[in-house]
Image (tube, rainbow, N blue to C red; front, side, top):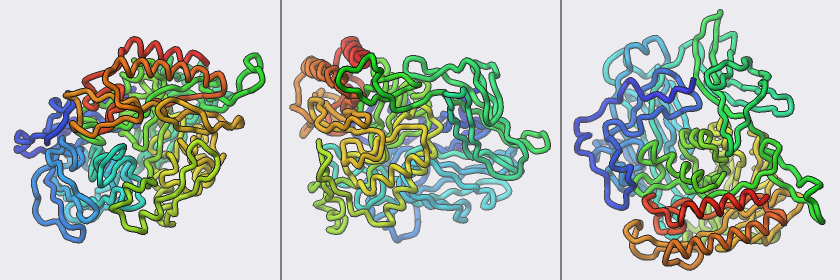
Length: 614
């Protein structure tokens, strides 16, 4: 049922596509596979597939102008969906808050779409996007991480070429918008800004009468019931939901009993297909193919047989105590920055994480395209999803910011303590924007059952009103656990107490009424010559080591420490990190994914021994 189809209506491409060349710098092997006439051709929304669509990725005209100027003439061509700062865009230029980035291209609407509404989809655009079709403004969107779309039918000409223009403005870290690790002046753990379109742009036709907007499957394990909430608009009189397992229909209805349910877990990533349809007068007027997984996340306690003096809170997956162990995953690429060069590249890190014996990924203050979460569902990797931070409290990064912004970001972080932390002085309009963007991110991602934990804040960066943010998060989705602030500050309003400690793991803050985890540790640096973002100033959290053997020896010692912590209440651990990122050489792999620094067999055995020690 799950049809991950390639666009049958290819995007119009300039003949100069054959002249496109990527920019300078470190590249992955997949950079050579990028086809400028058809980059990232895969269907971008595998959780909700319609049969007809048109991919608009490819070469567009672009221009960078002063922020208050209108679009004039193009500066050249840019390869969408790679951000303008990236090598794969073919541009590799800085934009900044004083300027605006413009995109322009033409497209045609297939004749067979006549009589239907046409939706223009953007996977993600960082940060404020304004969109015109044939000179008519069809809408605007703020937020760099959530998908959005516009019904462009009223702006379309009856036939022939249609013009599309997009204006983007992005302040990066010079304001309070969510931006994660992006920063205007890169250094240390802060990376190159990402401006503009960085996920697939595409068209699809839908019925003028009614259409499905989204759906949310919720598994009730106690009653073996699957409830599918369908969000749809228009004139229809019936919603039909059908559930399939390996091609066989097993249940139907918006609330359905599932006999002998196959539960999803990292050890057994079982998946069910969904067919969702809208009907009017018995006629199907819209339908999508989707999928879901059946699993529960909960807080459970050690069984009495395991108790000595203490009883600890643990993470329950499908009612079973599970130790979650995996990498801090930044999701950056040397050639595409926020955007993986190909779909094979996108899933590569997930596959390696699973091969290395880990069972989870903490997606660190970044949001990935829908296909990334789909592959986590497929391969069986649990995800802890961070909200991209809106600020940091580093004096070094405040040197170039306005005094007002610098002052408001300099809150106190109660590292390894429950005392002394303070909130950022976040203006009301930016609090409202935080809730808007975080809500959109959760709405877009909660369909993916691999996600087991929401993480609204990290290390007090831009942290504010934590109990209210936790309450908001739980109101949007009560099926996952909430890690209120990975690394602190703590308000005791979520499900998890999460401490960070480099380089060795440690649990210097512990509260028995909550799940206790080590949300970051490790960061063992080893620069591999020939695979570096730059030759000097490379660093790791611990001393920069000279060989993979050194890294492995220390990693194994840390693993032995984790086993002791597990016996005294630790329920998860996150190692920094999957890959090197820019000048940060803390990765298990080099930034170009060419070198795995450790012995993979030994590495897997170590990781599995930690997970199984619970």
